[in-house]
Length: 196
Image 1 (cartoon, rainbow, N blue to C red):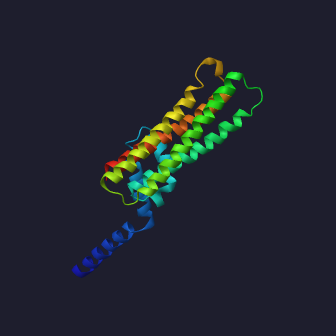
Image 2: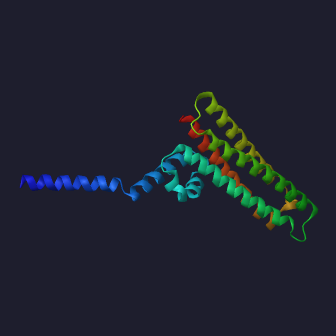
Image 3: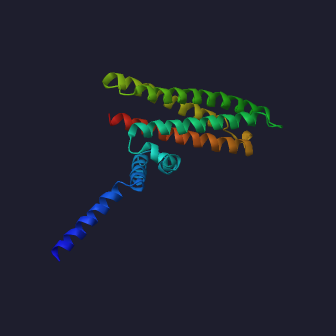
């Protein structure tokens, strides 16, 4: 009777260990890591939503999380830049709308450039340590902060009632989304840097 209890206990422990090593448990651990990391960002729900699909590649790596967050921000900035460029061709634009769109395209182009540099810089960091690591992180933080400023400048260009309407609303919504994702990416880069 005692030996069957011991066998049952050992089999139960073996099942627990097997479950802990399963892909589902790994995805769950990665998802929990993303949720915990995103909880410290300004837009945690958006952070989780934009990164959850990448959980298998992020796993529990702060470096991979920061890299992925920057890549997501870059892709959204590129998409928004293309969208705003299409709006410039819209017929019937008021002169002020046309100018605001033109300025926004320039700001989004600069944002895309800065985010591209940031993604590359984070990749090049590799195993950098000490002052070299801090220098790379400082570059990334500077460029991501500047990209965020570019995005906010684009939105500011549509201020005032003279520009109210569907064009303003659609551009503004997209650019604000990019700015929020970029803000989250900056926060995750800072988290990564603080863990080094």
